[in-house]
Image: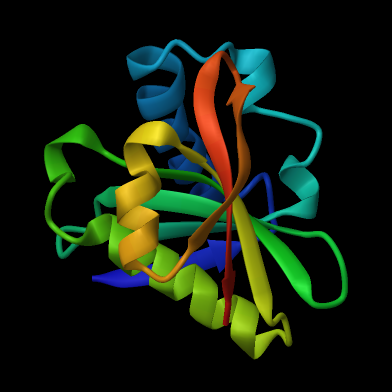
Length: 144
């Protein structure tokens, strides 16, 4: 297993991230392409978890917001690999990177179905439920 990251939207790493996101968000969840692939792609750091056979298993991205705050977005695990701690691994890898870069807080918009996952990882739910791409979400934060 290895986690790699890139800001290069022409790299194979980025293309692997987008492939996972298309499968999970666009095909499985019906998120429109113009929402999924957005104007922030080039501003983000994209992470991909590769398996032992160099297959792209999971992805997420970090969007810098302020000097001490970064936003975790687009976390997805290929369907065939879910339930095996790969989501936890990619999030922990992104958190470690953020911490190394001097960030001390991560925020994210969690789909309702992922609230428990993020709570187990130390995130706290904040505010009211909101819709993003017609999917129910809550804002969550974690000090790192």
